[in-house]
Image (cartoon, rainbow, N blue to C red; front, side):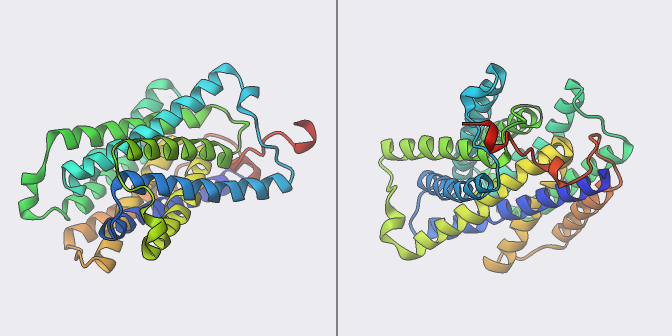
Amino acid sequence: MRDRQLVLGSLAVVLAASGFGLLGVLSRFSYDAGLEPLPFIAWRGAVGFLVVLVVIGARTRSGVRVVDPRSLSRDDRLALVLVGMSAIGLNLGMFIAFDLATIAIVLLAFYTYPALVALVAVALGHERLDATGWAALALSLGGMVLVVAGGIQAGDTAAIQPLGVLLGLAAAGCQVVFVTTTRGRYRSVPSEQVMAWQLILVTLACGAISLLAGERLGEPLANGRLFGLVILTGIFAAGLPSILFLVGIRAIGGTRAGILMLIEPLVGVTLAAALLGEALRPIQVVGGGAILGAALLLQRTRSGAGASSLETLEPAGVPAREGT
């Protein structure tokens, strides 16, 4: 049923957002333990890739074939390359921006992407939002601004660097490309296989750049605490949420998925308050309530695609008996 698809797809996105919300705290702990941003991205991607391989193996045993990208149409192959490049650009943009401007300012720039996704989807005719959907988008964006802006200290405004803001916006643009492209291309490729390609590309690119920059890529191998942190990050803030995010996009569409992903900064700010001593302000609590209210409001809308079972949430790919 449509309602079941909407609920399960929304749950997948909420879980993905919660996983990605761990990233701020885990990255801070990793940096404090001696790891630099680019090696952190590379390790996160590598561990996440291994997690996805386990999922691929489990799905293969249940009858799902590993899809050879060469068997796809030319347009789908180009789309896979495009989303891979967007994933690399997103990671580089965000983590370089974090080094130039305050995290809160970068997040404000990056989380313009749900609105951009909605505008692109409407412009391309992929989706239509009713009045309730637009209200949920406005409410969630407003709540995100309150959550993030509430964490900016009085002296932080001096740390606003134009290049950092531009990189945050560039990362948002990369996310729009990812969401928009994965919504309608390579539907025969299961989500975990799509994400495996993206994670390995990010790992190789950021690992190579890290080595060229002379950064200590092997640091986690000599530091037990740091090794534990990157393993935890790769599993719960890369591999699993990456799969769930793509499953959610395919189930409920890029616009609704983008709106629900605004739960991510709420999770990140809350964890920072609990684990890093960054106290929540009343305005952030109000913003969090607005984001959650938007998520509830969004459940009143209906997915445009029909669905009768969980199968519609995730394309099973070509059965093993038909492939090589």
